[in-house]
Length: 439
Image (cartoon, rainbow, N blue to C red; front, side, top):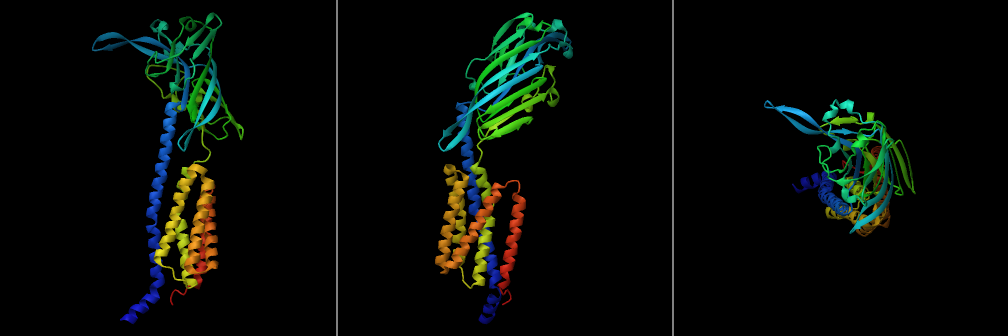
């Protein structure tokens, strides 16, 4: 009986050891899941830190306006009773031009950083005319004396100075409108800056021009809503890592190490709301466009991507150990496999913790060198062979270099990974020829 068991074991021990190694690889996925959760937790802490900074500085800013609003009375009949209801009509400018120079600054909360900015918006534009006829509102129903000019800043905490809009037309004395928050609350503009709009400008036949300078601060992004029939925006900054975002990309842009310059031109045809409307509201911010000042390398995102390759590194390393064990007759205990696997998992905790201080690339190099050195020393001591130890060191260096390349080549990661795995499989098949599976 003992001979039968011994014979069966000798004939099947390679297969059994293969299943055991596969089980160990799956078992080591458990700590990688914990590491993935740790990366997510640290990423959330970074988001919380940025939120805290922006709440004290100012959040991302979206600029809307200026927009003229004129209330009117509409006759409504309810339950055989007729009464007047006050509603609002809105008129957007014919032309709008905004120039912005963003001055970036890095603020820290502990080890986390947020990109904030200050800017001075140079706003100018015009109304060729107020298109009352487009809304079919009787002129006698319009409440000219209650007309308002709206200008919406998403976070008024970011205003550094009082905002004044200068109005001018050919037949009327120029006027300066001092904008104040929530002076006029309407369905469309619930908390926007507002000012009473002079009736004399509404009764003129000539074009109305407006200019204003807005000193503003914010965090991350600056967006503009194209309320003009023709909206032109120019944004420039010394920040070298912009991300152009929103509904429209810039028509022209230049990005250099010294900063960027971008220009947009948006027409009324490019948005989903009319040039004038009455009552109700539109989601104006859905058409917003602009720029975000981003950190060029997100260490947490790259660490997350590297953790996803953990099963590949562990599987290939264990496969190499398996081939060494059976080709060179150097038995390796399952516990020794497990210790090497733990070392491979600790690479990611080193990478995560170091990247918060040194950046991803430097952290990856340090963590890889430490892990490769530890495993190389352990294999040399375990197998009493400097030749095999150097081979393992070389193999791990190639693996970590390959994964690092995949992380950097985001657009080509799939094809490079597929080619790399194909070559790896070919090498495993080549070297496994020497194993006598049936003996």
